[in-house]
Every structure is written in C-alpha cells, then in structure tokens.
Amino acid sequence: MAALIVIILAAGQGTRMRSRTPKMLHDLCGRPLVGWPIAAALEAGAEKIVVVDSPANTLEDHLPDGVATVIQPEPNGTGGAVQAAAGEIGPRDTVVVLPGDAPLVTPEAVRALVIDHSDGGAAATMATMVLDDPTGYGRVVRTSDGAVERVVETKSPGDATAEELEIHEVNSSIFAFSGGPLLDALLMLSPDNAQGELYLPDVLPALRSAGLAVAAHQIADPSITLGVNDRVQLAEVRAIAQARIHAAHGRAGVTIVDPASTVIDVGVTIGEDSTVQPSSFLRQRTSVGRGCTIGPLTTLIDATLGDDVKVPHSYLVGCEIRDGATIGPFAYLRPGTLLREGSKAGTFVEIKNSDVGAGSKVPHLSYIGDAHIGEDTNLGAATITANYDGVRKHRTTIGDRVRTGVDTTLVAPVTLGDDTFTGANSAITHDVPSGALGIARERQTNHEGYANRKRRDAD
Image (cartoon, rainbow, N blue to C red; front, side, top):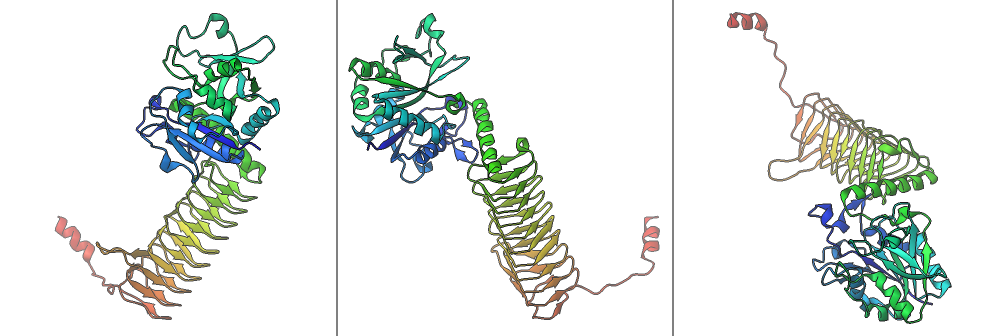
C-alpha cells in the first residue's frame, strides 16, 4: 500500500501581515497557523509530513517532533516549493500538498481526497470548489468529457481570457499526486508566465501530455480552504475555528453560555457537565474536570482544574486546582500554585508558587508567595507572606489547623506549627511552636486630649 506523504507549503513571506512574526507562526486559537494543516495531516494518517520553509528557516523550532523541513531556496512559486521537497517523495508514495496558510482544512477532507485519488486511478487529483465570487482564484478548465485540463491563474491581467474568468470552479491549492508521475512532471515546470514563477498546477497539463489521468475532487464546503494573507483574513478564519472548538465541547457535554464572548484554545480539555460562563478565556493547555463552573470573566492559562471547581471572575496561570476547590472572585493564582481538595482562594487573593492544603482557606485580601500551608488552616484577611529580602526568596511554612489574625505579616523564612494562632496586626519574624499564640505588635497607648491639642496647634 502506498505511503501517505503530506507536503505543507509554508515558505511565503507573508508581507501583508505587516508583522515581525512570520505569517506561519501567528497564533490561531492556541496553535501557530502552520500547526493546523500539520494536525489535520497527522489525524488523516500521514506517515511523513514535510514542511517547506524559506531560507530564514524560522519554522523548524516550532514544529511537532517527527515533522521534517526542507528549504525552498528562492521564492519561485508553489511548483518551486514542491521541487524543494522532491527528495522526500518516493515513486510509490501518495503525495498530498496543502497550503500552510489554509488552517481550516480537516482530516476528513484530506482522507476523502486521498480515497478519491486512490479509487480513481489518476496521477493527480485536484481539490476544487465552486464559488459565487471566484475573484483571485485560479480557474479550473475542463475538457469536453469533464476531465481536468489545466488551471488558469488570474494573478495578473492577461493571465486568463474573458471566457476563463467566467468559470466559477476554482483551484483550492490542495492536491493529491502519485509520487512517480509528480516527480517526472516537476522537472518540466517553466516560469513562462506573468509572475515568472513555477506554478504547481502547471504539472497537470504535463501529466495529461504523458497520457495520464487528472481528476477533480470537489469540496462542498469552501470554508475549509480559506487562506490567510492578512490580519483581517486571520480574524475571519479564527471565528470559524473557534466555532468548531465550541461545537466540539458542546457535543461532549459542556455548556458554553455565550460562545460569542468566550475564547477556548484548541488544546483545552473540559469535562462533562462543566459550564463556561460569559467573557471567559481558556488558553493553551488548560484542562478542566467535570462539573466545574468557569467564569464569568475568568481567564485560565495552562491551568489544571479537577472536578467540581468554581472560578468566578479570576485569573489563573500555570497552577493546579484540585477537586472541590473554590477561587475568587477577583483572585490571581500564579505559576506553581497548588490548591488541594476543598481549599479556597477568595476575594482579592494572590498566590504564587505555594501549596495550599486540603480544606484550607485564604479568604480575603491576602498575598501568599513561596509558602506551604497544611490542612484545615484559615488565614485571616490581609495575611501577607513577606518572602523577598531584596536579594533572595524565602519560604514560609504553615502547619495544619492554623488560624492567623487579620493583618498578619509572616516574614520568611518562618514556620508556624500545627494548631497555632497569631494575633491581629502581628509581624511574625520568629517561628511559632505548635499550639502557641504568636503576637508581635506594640501595646496600645491612648493619649487623652489629643484632639483638642491638635486643634489648638492649628489655631
């Protein structure tokens, strides 16, 4: 059986993006643009994927393991790009060519094209589509018996005749080839056109001249071939990709209350019976368990949530939240934070690089950094870990069943043993042994008549 080789054309300069970031690396729902056709090819069963890059070689470090790259030495068109990959093609291979800037192509579309190509016995099968407005696309010219004769480009005036411009069936820039005939036809390409480029569709007449069949596979949904040349088109494609992601989660048992205000990246996983409230953003490799409520107005970036977690109006980055924990509103959990089962990070609480034990609570207005908190502990409002001495970070250790009074500052490194208490407004600079009360503040002094003296001084 022929091996499936997918060649992804990604050497274009993308100047219309007007960006220092290469076009193929612009983000689309948590994945670089070029990553989308790669993912489709992998899911379609490709044994080898080859990405054609420019001489700048900007893509190699951003591709999945096992994806090969080749360099197109000069920007001489799609034919030149496939020529650059010729060394990766075997004569018995089935070769699918995909544009790197067409991210909406699906694995199902790739598989359907390959099946049609295999069943039809053609040397080349071109994916085509019929558009109401075909402006800018190469037109598919057929013979009287319906076979594909050639593709007429329309990039420059004079490329196509008036009659050819009336054709509404267009080239999608997606092809399937038999490896041997493709390799032979690539040698016959010529830059004899208005652009002075090597057009990949020009292999079709060469194949026909060799007595080989050229077929067409018509795609019913033209949206899967939409390309990205500028940021406006990127936004249009993003809307479609995001709608697909939402639909997949919805069919898997997730409620998305307001899809129009919700952003969910392609790498995010969400368990059944979870609800995503409006204006929430789930980014990168976030994982959400079953029965969770996210939002409204919550951002999760690379966060891992267990089951039955509630996170209203909060911002979480690189943290782990275990079953039954509650966060927010207005909480900020930073990388390295672990909230264990049934714990709480409440209103206007910031936590970073800290382990909060099962059932423990940091309810209000607190900063906890570089700390370990035991189980069933409650930190009073405005508890602060002073973890930085101006040179180094230090850790705070808080035991089980600890109760800190409001406005307690824990000056690290410091340890509070199990079952300890702190008095309100204390600055704890020494360890508090288990079962003790730590108080670190001056005694109150009342100065009688102070208000009258203040008025007399003002007069």
